[in-house]
Length: 157
Length: 197
Image 1 (cartoon, rainbow over the protein chains, first blue to last red):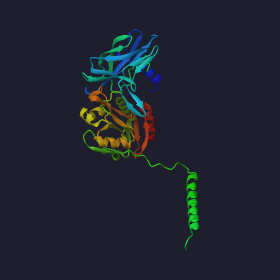
Image 2 (cartoon, each protein chain N blue to C red):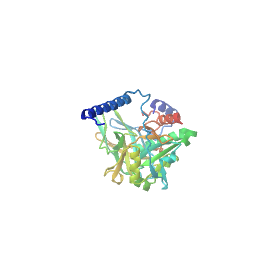
Image 3 (cartoon, chains in turn brown, red):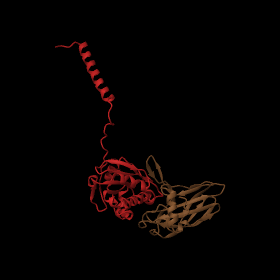
Image 4 (cartoon, rainbow over the protein chains, first blue to last red):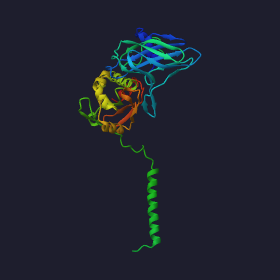
């Protein structure tokens, strides 16, 4: 991925999409919340987001809730000795002054027990719970099965 | 002629010296290239979604791009298959020379959830294969890759799968050519394939 080239391209072509909305809670800014279209509702969906902590104290994402799934959880894909596994993450650290991404190949929300299949163009609310900043409800845009992330002009990916 | 004990020992020593010298020649001989390794040819025989047995030999003449995964995987597998789909689209006229394969490491559940429905949603060219436990283990061993069932009360059905997340490229003669580690951009995979086709 060549981020600069890609984002320049997106800047020219993309319309501001839902996934480009920003949400704030306390010192935290939440950007680029997106999910991937699913094939039916029997397989888990995924949730990605970017969280920036502009404050002076560390925080952590400790929970996710959404009407789109009966059992959403935080997971982390780890590759150890060439083997990928996906342990449950109790929390995702959001250190002071840093941006953390829930992104393909790393931390992600796993949306188990989908209530309906997620279709490209749909959106659903999700409430993120932070250790210090508390709760914030955001909109999550469902992108195509092949998406690698939202096409935001200001996407910092 | 009878040899004395001493003569036997001397002859034996001479023989050993000769062997040693020969071995030295073999080792010291400057070889132009490392001894050609026997080609590493992974092989498998696994049923496709319709139950038809497919084996490595069926894809002779084509490059095959092999991924081991499971359809209940929300992150790594869709990301990789999305890249494979992009590569197949971008290959254009040369796409017919490449066969992408998705080998299930969770075959029983994947069959129940729908194997071809999953693979074709990414790209119609991707062929999904899901065998029984023994066939699956044999295929993975043949590629020298790892997969395991991880019991996890919080996962769907109480388990998840850990697996090698790379893409493997097999040549038209069945030789293992290389792997693309997880996260290799589609453009890089495309460029590599185009240089070979």
